[in-house]
Length: 380
Image (cartoon, rainbow, N blue to C red):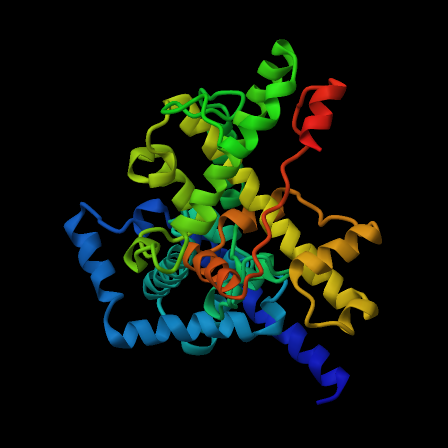
C-alpha cells in the first residue's frame, strides 16, 4: 500500500470518527464510578451489568480490547480517546445504537479494570481508567514476567500515575508512624555474644559503654535481617500459601504495618521498634533491588564483565566498586516498581539466590560509632 493510499485512508478514517464524535463523547462522559462497582444496589442496573458476563458479550468486549491494543494509530492515545474513536467507527460501519455502545463501553472499562486489579491488587476509578495509556493496557493484557532485581522490572509492573502517587503516599505515611531512632531489642536489650563482648574489657568505662551500645544496636540489626532474609524466606520455612496472601510487596508491607504480631521477625518488640524495623525493611528492599539492577547493568554494559559470566554478584560488585560504577537512579518510578513487584516473584527470586548462594545484603548507610582511638582499635 503506497504512502498516498495510507494518507487517504487516514484522512477518511478521521472524517468518519468526527461524524459521530460528539454523540459518542457525550455517551462515554455519562459513565460514572457506579458502573465500575463490583456490587451495585440498583436491581435494574445490576441486571444490565450481568448481561455483560454472557459469553457472546465477553467475546465482543475482548475483541475490542485486542483491537485497541493492536491498532498502531491508538498506540499514543489514552484509553478514553481510543475507546471513543473505536466506538465512532463501530457506529459508522454497523449502525449500532448509542445505548448498546454505552453498555459495550462499560464492559470494556470493566474488563480493563479487572485485568489491572488482578495484576497489582488495585481497583481503578473511572477517571484512572480513562487516563490509562494504550501502552499500559498492552502491558496488562500481555504481561511480562516481573523479575525482582532486573532492569526490566519497571516495564513488567503496570502502574498508573494515580497508583504511583498512592504508593509513595503510603510509604510516607509509614515513615510518619511513631518509631524509635535506632535498633533495639525489647526482650534482651543488653545482650552481646561472647565474641563481641570480650574485646571490650580493656576499654575505659566511658568508651566501653559507648562502644557496647553501638555494638548492641549493630548486632540487633544484623540478627533482624538474618531472621528475615535467611530464615523467614527460606524455602523450608515459608508456607507457600502465605506467599499467595499478598499480591505485591507493598501489600506485604501493609500487612506488617497492620498486624506485626503475626510475623515472627517482628514479635517481642515495642510498637515503636516494630515501626522502626518496618521503615528500615522498606529501605532495604529498595537497596537490594538497586544493587542487583546495578549488577545486571554492569554485566550487560561492560565487555570485560561479559567475559566472566561465572562471576557471582558479590564479585561483580567488587569490580564495579573499583571502577566507581554509578548506582542506579532511585526515583519515584523505581520505588513504585520495587514495591509493586509481585510478592511471589520476590519470594521465588530470593529463594533462587539462596539456592545458588548468591544473595548479597547491601551494607547499611554509614552508621554512627564512637570516635575514640581505643574503640577503633578494638573493632579492628
